[in-house]
Each structure stands twice: as C-alpha cells, then as structure tokens.
Image (cartoon, rainbow, N blue to C red; front, side, top):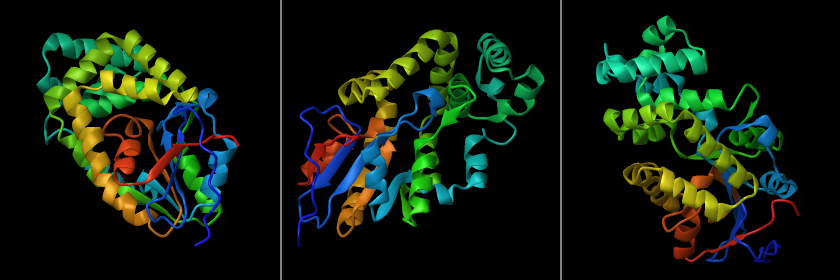
Length: 279
C-alpha cells in the first residue's frame, strides 16, 4: 500500500493535533484535543485541522451529537423523585448557593428553588461555568460536525450520551456537592483557574494542561471520568482506524499523561506524533 504522506512531526509536544500511523494502518488518523465550550474571542482553529477533518473518512467524537438524547439528559440530570438540592445541604450552604445564583448568575430565588433546585450539583456547577463564559460561545464539537456534514463525512461517537451521563452518575451526590460548594465559595479563584486553563489551551501547552487537569481533579473523579473512559476507547479506536482515516476529537484532558490516549495508543504500537495545526 502506498504510504499516505505524513506530516513532519514537530520537535515539541506542545500541540493539540497528533498524527497516528504505523502498526499496520493503511492511512494515518488524527487525534485532536478540544475544550468543549470556549468564549468566541478565545476560539481558534488552525488551517491544518480543518484540512485533516475535511480529508478524513470519519469524524469521531466523545459522543455522536446526532444521537444526543434530551429525555435521557432530563432523567439523569435530576435528583431522585421529590428531592431538592436543599435536602442535601445545611442551611448556611444552601443560602450561600441561593444568593450566589441570584447575584452572580441572575437566577431568582423562586426560579432556583422550583426548577434548578431539582438538578444534581454537577449540573448546577456546569451552569455556573457556562454563565461565566459569557453570551458568545463556541463549541469545537459543533463546528467540527458542521465541517464534516458539509463534506458528507460520517460522524460517530466513542460512547453514547447515556454512557457519558452514567459515568457522571457514579460520582456520589456528596462529592458533587463538595465540588459545587467549593466553586461557589472560591468563585474568583475557580474562574481564574478556568482562565488559566484557556490560556494554556490557546498556547497548546499540553504538558501544562495535563498538569492543571491532574491537580484540579479529585483523583477518584479523574479515574472515573477520564482514565476509565480512555481505556474503554482504545479498542474502539483500534477498530475504527484499521481501514480508514479518522479524525478523533476529544476533550484535551484525555490526551496527555500516563493514562492519556497518546500514551495508551503508543503502548498499542502506534506511532503518535505532534504535528502543526497550521501548516
């Protein structure tokens, strides 16, 4: 088989775009680290990334956005029947939460109590970060999907939306609450961390990103939400890449480190190299 031209690897590991070759692959595949939602002013997309998506045989993301099931989300994001978040919190923390939602997020007490108060803490926390990102947001996944659709390139997911939500479900309400309360009580330092993360992302500083994810994530959470899923994805990636060129886009936190996809793929015998997002 004539080898497809490979991009020349960079001499730094600081890239969000990695080329996967060797180990019997007939064509190279590509791995890209996304940030699921970013403000419009921070959004960037290199020419080579667009080219690789447009020339791929399949776009592979964490979940197939086509198959996002809103009813499943609705079922899995709410607390057990008849429960409200205040049933799990002491009054002081609950009042802090309520005031925070009103003053910083703009959700009135009544609305919070009756609607948002039924959500699991994880989803309330997502809401807080989402709000912080401002009105004008971009999603790499949505944009990649559009690029693929415009070229009639099929898309698939490494897990179903339901599986992804079930992973979240393995985190106890207590742990979710701890994380949420910490975010509210240390709002300015938590959002500063997010700002730092975006800065590392924009400079494609994979080592720093990996370190930030590792120190910030509670380790048990990291094992459940990242490591376990990474190892689940490897057999799927192997069979997907076997006979076609896949463009694989997953959260940047899945790439680096001992249990990251780059290392796991290398262990399987693939050559995994950083390439430029812009050439």
